[in-house]
Length: 108
Image 1: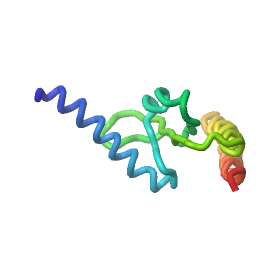
Image 2: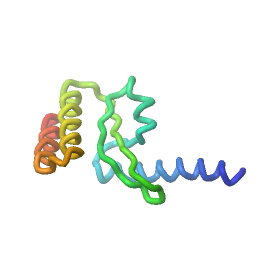
Image 3: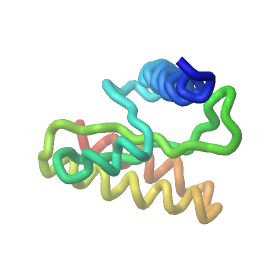
């Protein structure tokens, strides 16, 4: 196997390992990369979780939760969560925690 092939496979395995480890931090069953989220978006609900920097890579990667249940509660949660992330990206930091917590309460 050439070094280039190893690097490509190694990067994918490294990213998968890092994402799997993040499931505990975000308390979700599955985290996927932006590329995977785009591929499954038509079949599952997708919730953006965060932008993280994976060790060994430059720049940040957006990470997503795959949600198997397509219930009204989840749809509302994802809408509120998107709004919370938008506030964080627009530097409306004081409002972010409030919206984020509210999005999680919808599921209760």
